[in-house]
Image (cartoon, rainbow, N blue to C red):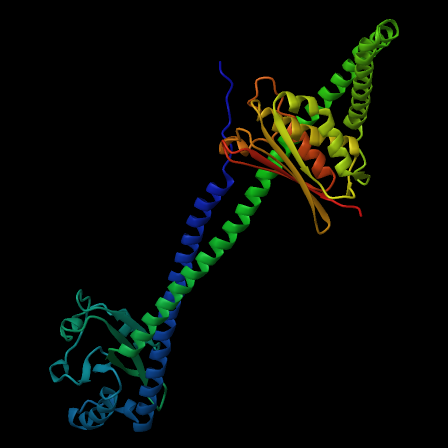
Length: 449
């Protein structure tokens, strides 16, 4: 049975989809509620103003007493004057006056006078109970008898039912029904609706953009932290391997040195010279292994001061024979006196050795290695450029990752360790390359003086 593999959770994709749906839903609901609230309140406010105006006219003309008048001749004059004033109000297209028996006592359309409506009309019932009633709608689908008689070209109207009270007792004696086409009011409502929806759209976009930016930064931070954890685990393995290798090398080196000393004492002059070289190299290697062993448990002091050009020249001396055998020309242009940089000299030597070794490996059939340095403010910039085969772009992004290499005998540690050493010194190491045109390593190290 194969082990189950979990797919990595894509935080940014999940957030972008869910947050977009949530913000769209919330914005749409909020805009709908706000638009409805705006419409209802503006219409209600217009109805209240209309009611106050109509009731003030009725009170001024003492119209309420004529609703109960049975004589049409006595009732016609006052109601006609009252209704004429109302019919000339802005946006009014029809005005009807109802008695308590739901009979139209007067209308600006004479064919409606005297008609009695018995169909269900909740707005008229509310007005007869003393409340202001409001209705909006279209006449394309009439639900009331009087709507059928309404002008057919009207698409939308506002209908107000205004109670009229008897000035003597305050009881409701009739209802004034007003049909209005408040075009300015409707335009204002439409403009307000557009503003509400536009605000909801812009607010939703701004909120989504801000949250997306925050989550994107958080996602990138998490990814970097995950990469740092993976790299830390790799470096922990490298540290354990370093300690094991260092412990294992010290005994064979001691044997080699002892054997070389015996051969030097018993051998002839040329052999003695070779043995002296072997002893010197073994001592140097043993010292390096000892320091590496110490460093694997306790990193070196990054506050040390190191003459960088001297360390570089020593590294070049150790690769002189190899460069000569490969027909590689080394050009060095370094400032004098040597700048002092921050860092452990042995660790800096290890970093430079890795860079020089890589440059020589890239030029097996000869070439040129140019090394230059200059002061840049508080930094010393050291540049190593070769004319080798270069690095493909897809490989360049992984050269500093530990334990990743395409070399047959490589471990994928050299450049990773070099960059780690430079960063511990407070500097930076960059590698630039074009395939077939060589590579350039740029070290920037903080100077101490």
